[in-house]
Amino acid sequence: MLSMTPSELLLAGLLAAVLVLLAWLLVRSYTRERAVRDQLVDALADQMEQQLGAQHREILRDLHEGLARQTDRIGEHARADRDLLQRGLTAASMQLSRGMQALTQSVDGRLDTLSGQVNQRLDEGFRKTNETFASVMARLATIDEAQKKIDGLTTNVVSLQELLGDKRARGAFGEVQLEALVQNMLPPDAFAFQHVLPNGMRVDCLLTLPAPTGLVAVDAKFPLENYHRMFDAAAGELERRAAQQAFRADVKRHVDAIAGKYILPGTTSDGAVMFLPAEAVFAEVHAYHPEIVAYAQQKRVWIVSPTTLMAVLNTARAVLKDVETRKQVHVIQDALGKLAKDFQRFDERMAALARHIEQASRDVQEVQTSSRKISAHFHKIEAARFDELEPDADAVPLPRT
Image: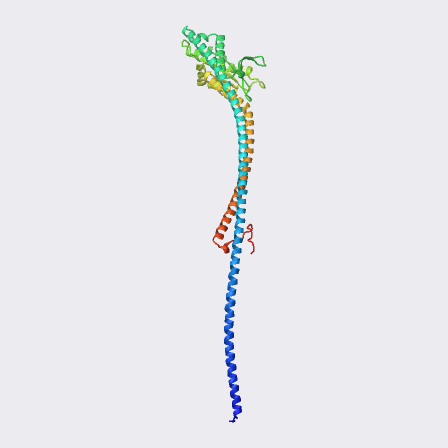
């Protein structure tokens, strides 16, 4: 081991002391530097905290001011939308009211016109019906007077057989009965008595019926002499049988005469009527002489009694009434055609009105949807739930701070 001199030892001690002093100074310097750094960090943190608080308050103040301005703008837009919606609804209501009023006036006018025409037609129909009824009553009064006269003749012991004993009287009785029945059942322009046909023959009654029937001749004469002999109690069985055969021959000859004189192709109808004014004779022919009925039908001659002639005349009157009604059908059809056009226009206008109402309804629904969205935005803004606000293309952007 090397030995050191005292000076070296002193120098080494001084060096060691310097090193220790330097180490202490370094430690102390580090400690003070750390303390100063901590103080600086604390001071900077306080200053930054103060600056951040001031900036945060400034941002919040700007945000509140922006929200207030946005709320004012949204309120103004909402009031403007409500005013616009109110004006639109008011205009649509006024237009709808004017359209309904005009439509009501048009329909009322058409209905009044149609009602006037219908009332006029009904008044004319009632007037004609009253005239016909008055005419029928007058004719019934005439018939009643004639019936009273006939009753008076009956009380004076004037029998039907005596009245019909003469052929001329028998023909006059048939004509009177035929005239009474026809005049009571048909209008005056539907018949003519003692009419002369183009072939020069005079028919007891000529009925004028609508096409295709046309003119129908009615003969009131009938063979009755052999009919009375058929039921003569004083005659024998052979005489009654001979009278029955003669009666059938008389009726057939009468049928041939009617068919030859009163059925004129191109002038009258293809059939004629043989009127038997006694129901007993009509019943005898149809009950016990069917070959006569078949022969008459083959010749297009229809055998009728007072009862069946009333049925024929009643049918003819119904046909005439139907023809008269058809003559007025075009008036009713014209009125119905005009009414159909009015209703078609009414339907078109109602469809247009329905489209306008449907469009107004869709506009109202869209406005209600916008109103609900605006209300929802208001609630979220009031609750400060800004992150829940949904972007809207129609929304006004918030101002930048």
